[in-house]
Image 1 (cartoon, rainbow, N blue to C red):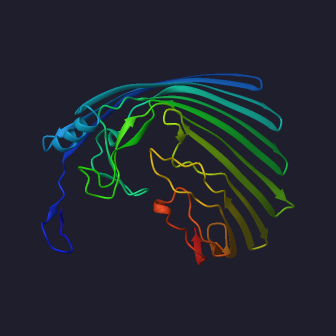
Image 2 (tube, helix red, strand yellow):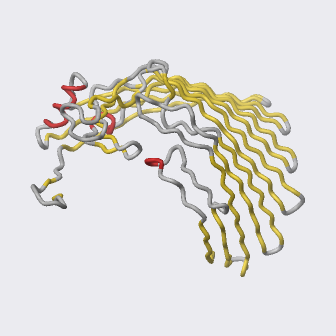
Image 3 (tube, rainbow, N blue to C red):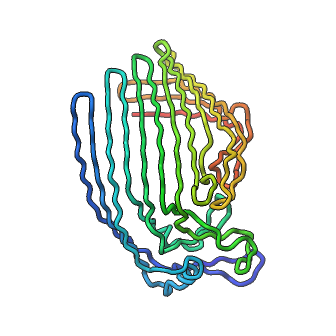
Length: 336
């Protein structure tokens, strides 16, 4: 494919540098035991991954980058990875408690090993793969409680992860540095040490009378890179959502409130993140059943998203791109 400069000059051409060949095989075993209100399940998985680079252009451009900035380069890699885990659950009438503990390893993906000039729109950087990456070592624990009784349902969960040899990008060419004539940061993936994530989610629902449903969700995630001594990037802030839906004959009306706190805990070394201010949104939705038979139905829908035309952006948005303002939608849906 040719790339023609708008201001004239030399034509640039995109070429296929190499083919990445990928093979995978594995096996798994699960053993379970059930006794009264208790249930226990143990499982184990083993996988073998094999990557290789087809010699299209001598593998030279990527190889030279990796040897210069990662220390070495390998055109073939093989990984043996595993995961072992234990799940338990206990239930009694309206209550149920579940727990899960697992440990294992994760092999680097072909993109992490051999990415070449990979553009990252989140922060306008260029990312390079690293073919000498080691597998990540993972430890995870999760607990969950669920309560259900008549019109009420509540679910609470919490989790924690510990990751060794955590794979993340590291800047090797700052903007306008020698060898980098652009304003972009150039990064190469490396095993950067130990990182943690932990968080919780909570959700509940209440059936109001015979035709109303009140729902609520909230959650928070904490991420920390112990080796670098800073927060992990792309961690969503505390959020909450409340939604009420009411059905009356052929009419269905809904209102939803959604809010997210500002994100003050920002990464600086893996990615240079920007502060995201808090925001909240209001959505209205309406539906009317125009026609309904056993095998055929027609539904009219209308909605107003972001009713108050609030301005803001999601912390995981690309380049802090603002979300849409007030959006009015309408349509007809037929099912048969």
